[in-house]
Image 1 (cartoon, rainbow, N blue to C red):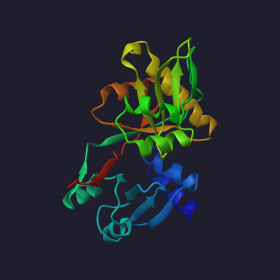
Image 2: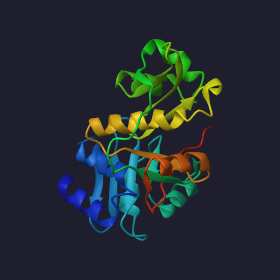
Image 3: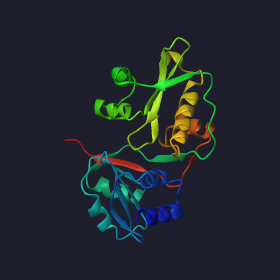
Image 4: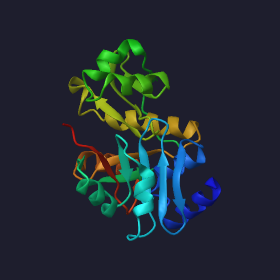
Length: 232
């Protein structure tokens, strides 16, 4: 069935839905719902449900199959509205950027995997939780950029769903173009793993949008929305 779903998604819009295609091709997660006329819901092993409707009406069966999870990524403003009406929260829409070129220039810097011993360093610069960062480190998904003396100047990597992110350059090293080379290293690592590099960027994040375009990534036409239950 996955091959059928892949053909369907690729025929609709492979760039906007590269995250879903990535999971399908890597055989990650469980297909919660699929109907070639209605839509698709796919649960990542970490619990996030990714969904895309194929039409705007008659989605009750799709919504029902998605259950009550802690986090959703829906490729539809209509689906986002549905969850908001159910009392969910979201920040703002995201562009999905992806890269289809050759390896990119990483500059004259050294890169390495970060370790669990550097958990506090990461959390002191990046707003996340220990469980999430631990998962990323244990799956060899967080890399740092070092100066000639081996001092860490920043980091970047992959989130649990394999999207690029976590990009931070420490304040004292900014305005040197290090962010470009740091993300370039992660792009190349994705290519080495046989992945299509991709990331999610808030529509208001002009700096990140400019960086993605500089590195040769392209944005899909369909926005995605991350939604979760309200606290309290």
